[in-house]
Length: 112
Length: 314
Image 1 (tube, rainbow over the protein chains, first blue to last red):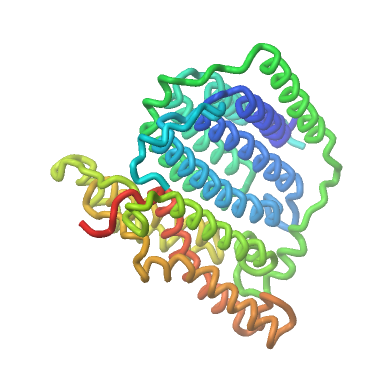
Image 2: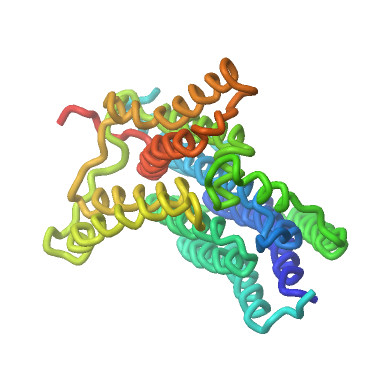
């Protein structure tokens, strides 16, 4: 088994782990981290496929690499948006639960 | 096919162990620290996969800025940790585990059954590098062959910042993002915030400039510039700018707008949308990249700073 395959199996496991954490962990911040773990596994799969496509003197196919660079930046901005939403929820409702508890609007007098 | 070295197996095991730790550990803060370490080790995997451009991006954005973002959120949500909602029941957890194992097994199977010889776009990317005058194939793909993706990604960044800003309460509308940071003016943090930025700015610009021919580019350089700005903000030496400032908004739209203008000019006078005239390809790409690195640095830093929380007026 080559090193690339080992990393490929590692990436597959990261996707599985991220999926499990995303479903079972009740805290939104932990869900965000798990989703990032899942995404990182998908990016690594791209890297493994690109590494196998090494040709023309390049060690890794440049097209999947460019896609992953774009993907990393998009994943970061999506994470930032999710965290901003979460912090706002915490400020407005006083908790970060997603289970439909009644909102405590009185905590934020500026309420909007 | 070479045999996996001990280093590769140990690295994969470490990454996997950190992944498991991130998911199962009790405290959110520990999970966050685990994820940052995971991100930095994944950057090493990218180096082993011979994708140094991605490794730089993963270390700077995935591990570095992403880590700061998650750590900051974990610190501010510490009280929420105490009133944690109840964990799902045994049935849900067992079905989730089964689903995850199935997904991972299917992907592992796909990895083991990948076609041999593997399809690749490396030869055409190298064969057409003459058209842009840049010799880093990844920069060529990002800025020329698939420039559409990169342009749309700039739009995504802009939408994300609009989304974050729209979460501001009425009283802080158009105000300064994040809390005002205080640090001991004679402390280590303030010292580093004075010492590092000049070096960091030079390194960031170098990484951007060398990206034409070697690993690097606007994303990686922009992330370094953003972290230098954030360092001075966290050390209390500078404050975040109010988001209603005109110059700030100009920087935020400079990258995608210049990209769009060049694309439309290509559509009107050239062969297609985003087609560069051959003689001008390199200067045009460099010009777009200069606008892009400013936009990327400002957007990443402001995404980290979060929604406006304080009124612009003192």
